[in-house]
Length: 447
View 1 (tube, rainbow, N blue to C red):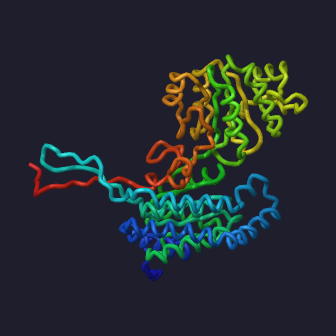
View 2: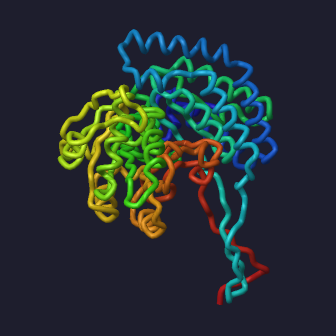
View 3: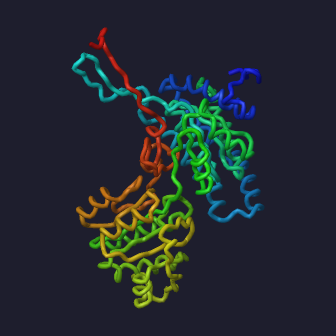
């Protein structure tokens, strides 16, 4: 789309820089073409992108090495460096996500709920793209591919603004996306990366409703709070990932040990890692010493309520069959703030609760409505937990680490939503679409 002469620019656009004005105009034009793109063209693009990601792994890692070097020089912490790294495994995962999306049915244009009305008309709903979404994210360069692939499959256009620490990686990845679009005869401008790390451009991206229909922030709490406060377009977000696992009475304690260990220690930095452990009083004396031994062996600090401290200080904390291998657990008294905390580190809060009701009440009060799990062998307890815990994902006998679009079979995710409107939990294809009513008639008129 050609630039408009400055004197003719609408008043709502005068506050936009030339960079954002151009990105917005190009995205809006591309979204019209993407909305009518065929399923074959979109799938071809995704498969082409998967091939390019694998073929260009070495080149992408060279770009990523520049970002890692700058990040280390700037003193970024371990978890932040972990999020920034583009390993071959991470690239393979996003490539598989592209292929998984390509294999999924195209939901755009599907009509559901068509019903004949007494007047004679038929009324239903058609699934359509959102249009243009803006994505603002920190650290993780793989988000560039996740966002782009979901945008392509859902027939949208997107404007991506990654963190300054990942600028080289994001530019290299975005160029592959644009190459895949062009090779499939789709508009390359359907996926655009904000080329500058200037923070002022973020403020402009979230305040141009004439070009952007939805904003999705994915990053630290301060970023998401700012976006939520200042955005002039709808926002899909989550602020924290204070995820809980509740070990119920009764349950399979061997299963509980395995699941809690995985939920907490498989990876510390993701938002779906377990940060709070609740244990029913009836199993606490048997379970907690075994769990504490696992955490002690992995260097996990345990911030405990008085009952947990009492149990752990009065009983040996050695794993079964691990005589002579005992490590002293790191035990501290939990504060009120610990129950709210998202650590993203080898730290976990632990509390003994009377039973299911207290566990659910604790989660709903202190949790972040992200992901919470129960380990139980009682079907009624499981059903009550699923109904009553107010979170985007609730799980029975499974690790919270599964709360992920790829693991849910969504192909990829654009983020996790803890909101209750439009999209909730991992946001995949459907979260990037809307429904409009369609009416079919045969010359019907209203009397």
